[in-house]
Image 1 (cartoon, rainbow, N blue to C red):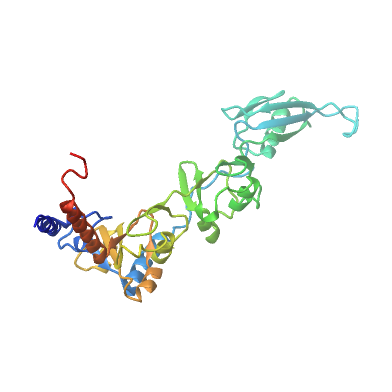
Image 2: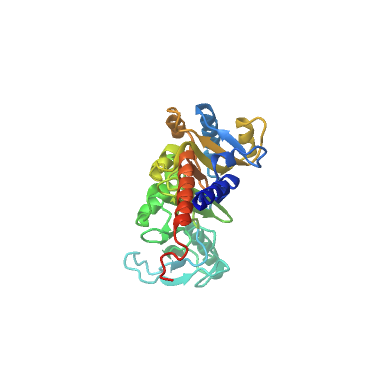
Length: 366
């Protein structure tokens, strides 16, 4: 009699509050609750295609739009110059044997000027070596007609790009005409340590910057033209994830390390459903998305919080899973099968039953 009362009490507990049963998350009936703040959308081939088209349109990156770069070949503050001046040789000595040149090595100051013998300080930043040579010749003409000079850039810190981040040899690299596209610069830097699809490239020019994956850069042939002096290239790993929960074999945080991942691919990554617990008809993808996409899929709702449901009991469900894209920050969740919940109820009942027949002293000798 006592055992019967305990069984009935356990059954009443289960029937009156199923939420007391241990679970990985909400039951399917909970997700189907009417008047929820989110929109529940049952996936089929047509809806998966709508989502894919919308996502592809969102992913279609606009062309890289950076402001005009600095012109190549100009000098700037910090450049080290070698300036040699030859005065006219009144003795008629040939140029080959003439050692009377005046040589000076100086660095362009932060104000953009440089000191030149017999001339004084003069502007150099933003000019080419040829322009500076002409200016020196013009200024020397009144006191030394026929004087000649040459300007050589000994150390060029202006016509470089700066490569930082996860590359073999970060540093400054010269901008060489027709040989300074993205892949050229990365080759000079020894390449990246990250797989292509996991490499994120950030290019900064002045106050503007653009970020793409390396794969996107290569596929769209972006930045194959020469970089501009002063550009910065930052190589870093892509940090994006999706999160799997519920009756799956590999729950938890999963790296989003390709340009696109289908739901079929996702199920493979999490090693499929836990076949003793999962309900194949209740595969859910939690997502926050733009309300206009929700309206396309559900004319009555326009929420940004959406739960997609895939039914893999339908043989066509696997074709749908191949079309449906999983996005970074998505949360795939697989609900428990009703039979698995029933098994937990039975385990609870058996547990209560065993407690009912156990001696009060639990075997103690008193």
